[in-house]
Amino acid sequence: MKYLVIVPDGCADRPIPSLGGKTPLDAAEMKSINGLAKVSEVGLVRTIPDGIEPGSDAANLALMGFDPLVYLTGRAPLEAAGMGREMSRSDAAFRVNLVTLAGRHDSDFLSYDDLVVADHSAGDISPEEAEILIGCVDKELGNEGLRFYPGVSYRCLLITDKLPVSCVLTPPHDVLDQRVGPNMPKGDGADWIGNLMRRSYQVLSDHPINRERMQKGLHPANSIWFWGQGTKPALPSLAGKYGVRGSVISAVNLVKGIGVCAGLSLVDVPGATGTLHTNFAGKAAGAVRAFEEGMDFVFVHVEAPDECSHCGDLEGKILSLEYIDEKIVRPVAAYLAGTGDPYRILVVSDHGTPLETRTHSAEPVPFLLFDSERRLPEQGWKAFSERAGVQGRFLARGCDLADWFFGERC
Image 1 (tube, rainbow, N blue to C red):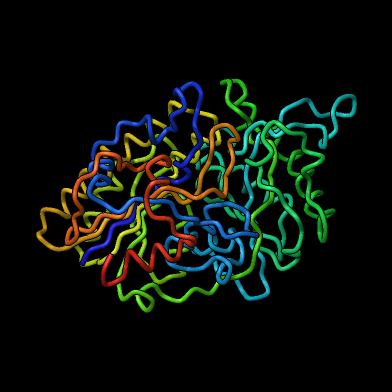
Image 2 (cartoon, rainbow, N blue to C red):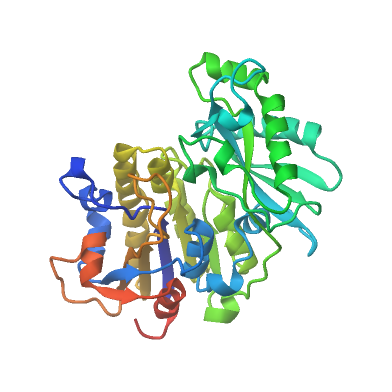
């Protein structure tokens, strides 16, 4: 049996008035995905347990079969694993975004706290620019026990043995267009972390890269923002849990890190960016290659729908879903069907990212589960959508969906 999981990150949404009450999943042309849905089990699954903030860390852990209430120690440590950064048990990792804060800041005008969070990703700043900028931050603010590392685009990392993980930090995508002050760190270590953020503004605001970006009409990466902190995780292997050898395909270090911690291999896809402009076809080719090389299981994560939601880009979100359908699901499903071997395909949103809020939600998300050995009678109402999911099966935990998917019988 071969197992394929496709995760369009944040694709679940709410009815949108401009779409006549449809969601992006309703509106997108997804012939391959919805063709599978009509002969599959469809439904809704709750991937975010009560008491946990909705995010890709908890959700993707759950979809790989790991209960977040047991195994989630923070987002950033998983990203560190995906980046190959070693952590000791005494270390803490913090996600560090390069962000855009809006408003003039000098002695005669606004204070840092009066600035506004204009962009959580600094305009999806290029990896090359981000590496230079976070390098400057590390040079000016880092030391032996406080090291900043570049990641993918705006997604950077701090590993330290000096800062407590109990500090209350807010993801920047949760406070877009809000003042910095009310959303600054709180609790243990807040003064220290807040001071690093303020000092980073002084380091970055007048950097040549940011001056050039502003001249081009692009958002500057003029501050760092901390969130997602935690300690080193410990996951059992997926091979031991389900008896499968597998690979992960993703542009983001978080999902790569979950795979690494679960004993999965990583498939490198050139041009995988985590945006609408990612290499969709390359991800499909990588999945086929992994199966051809003997993998039983491939987990394909696509960040683009989530990023479009954070940016309020309805057109881009719909387009990203259509690209996933045409450029990933269609060719990989055709490959699996052509092998003559039994296979299963799971398409599932990890969490919702409604365009109306531009941030994550904990609402149950739709899924379809196709089994080539148990093709169900075609039913026209079935689709990969929130509306169809309500009429199908409900699962209370994401890890229950994984158990069902890898079980002897779906």
